[in-house]
Length: 158
Image 1 (tube, rainbow, N blue to C red):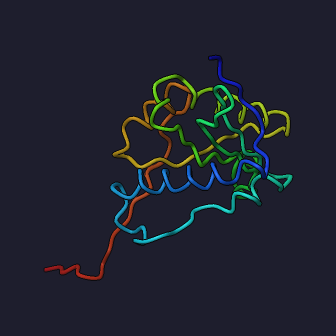
Image 2 (cartoon, one colour; image 1 turned 120 degrees about the vertical axis):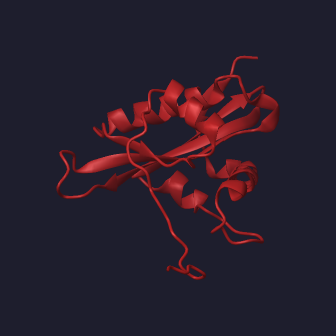
């Protein structure tokens, strides 16, 4: 029952679309700005077929159980690097959590980025999503910047 990590194909779309809804469901409690109802975060087909991105999946006995993508993006002109590898769509199905599958997918994504000569890797995670933060820290990530928000619709100042 050794996991296999491989590049996703368009044939994997039904499972990956289901995983996307799992990501959205998991993130809604952390983000009151996410629309209710049926939404999509990603264009998974484009992430699979575009040269500047790659989607990886982990399989156990032919069943896809984890996913993630890396996308090479231009970065800000004042930084030491010109591009970053941005990771997203990190998902492990409920029955397979705690098996280091997220790390296996991240390792594959990092290797893909290295092979593209991209060495600055970023991702976003909700500050209250402690299990995800712990998993990313185990993979070597460190907290770098905090993104703050303020809804001023009903804000009253004295």
